[in-house]
Image (cartoon, rainbow, N blue to C red; front, side, top):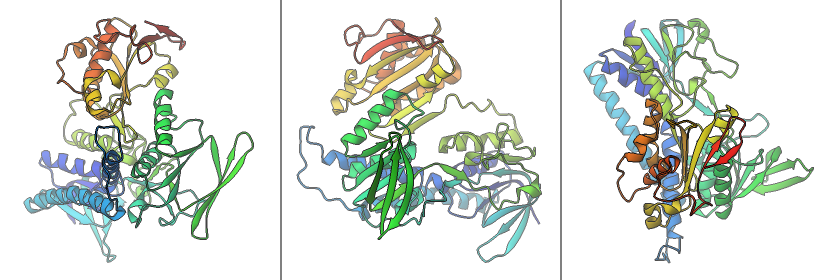
Length: 491
């Protein structure tokens, strides 16, 4: 029986990160994957969908007639779009395989293709495609088994007519119409992608009164307005009563709080109602590992209830994001073989939603701060006062910076909606982790012209030293305080 220092189950983003970190410590690693290395971080997930979004944004530019030039002739092919998406996926997939091959040759890593299952707390059975079983032993084990789209039992998902995100790459052409169930991040991103290409009539079912209900109203309302401007029909406050395939098309019935019922027919449906962890057939009972009611691990900074077994990525009850999973994978290994330089902190996680326009965030939003009864100060500035946005003719967006309601004005969070939003986040995320005030941000020298200059102006506005004055442009440049009761006091 082969012996390893670490066995990593799953070669998605979190598992691959864990394996590479273990190699840093000079450990012998077993990496087990039943599917494709890279997991949902590459295939039918983050990389593929974001590549489609980038392509849709590029294509949307060809239809824009307000930039000083007009493109009169363009050709759009779904096959070409998917081929380009596939090239991006293959590129990253080949990079990961290249690393695995390198460390296999050096003897530091052994890759196993197959289904992993605990035989005991330290032993893992690996069953390959031919049904052959090999058992290995490891001092430490990392479970990085990932997740898959959630299926609803009353909807006949076949990944051909009624799809999840896993089925989008299997389409042969742009559907003439599609309904998307779920107005969270993934649902809104695909609504953005399909509407950007302009070949598909998009319907979005939102059981809440507004999409993206976890975000502030100004963001969700702006995203909704832009989607509708792009031709998307949003069924606000709608409950799905029934969805089925009728004569090769999708028929769905909605009910509303006012008693209305509507029946619609579209060519395709996309179900986007969250993801579930791949916790089945792991033999967790043999290892003594416990799951919570949702099929996740309630981990203690990546460690499960069994001290030498760790859980990372979508398998935990924490935030299911690629960057979080990679951080958790690295942290788990650092706990095994050393002392992490810092504890896992989720308060300064940077995220981006690929919408129209993109939305980047870090830390608390106003809704969360009010719910926690945290007194805070807020600065908001529209993109139209940022020179780079003016130069790009992309002034649809805004910055919103939240700080503590005291003299230090430490950053609680930030939301940026607009072009290049993701490039504005990292400095603020670092400041949150360092627990420092905005005076440092106000004195940095940003490249000019650049979108991040808008953050600096927000910091200066809160300090009363801004170049763009709120009293002049008070409709879309403003500062205010919110006390613990949620009352707004304008500054």
